[in-house]
Length: 153
Image (cartoon, rainbow, N blue to C red; front, side):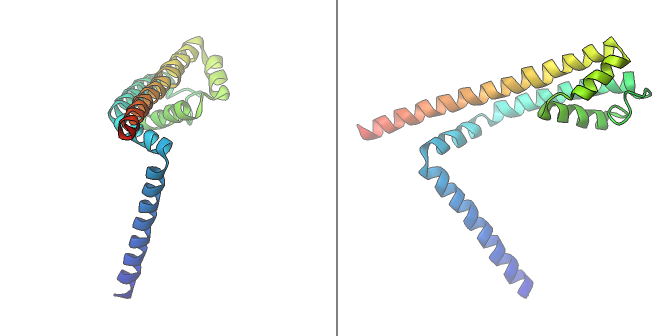
């Protein structure tokens, strides 16, 4: 019974922290605009991330089919989940020079395939995601500015 009381107190403290964060967000207009923009852009963001996962999946299959049995594929492209994890991390953290050089040493085909993945995944889709978020935040900022102007008038 005593442990349940402690858990309740901890849960209430957690809720209080969330409420404090919400108050901070509401008190700073710039932060409120960014959060609203992120919420509004959630659908577009999820669509772009789904497209990114599809691209990662397709390239993971290609790399596993081409490199699963080779020395170059060891630790990176032995199976599809491992390849997807590796490619997703490469997209989020940036292309690894060691990987690129090993693929180049293994053959131009693997090198060009990997570079095409980097261009599609890292450059195109991630920049598209940034563009969507910037556009939505800009629109939300404009709406908030107009609302503030009408409230003053």
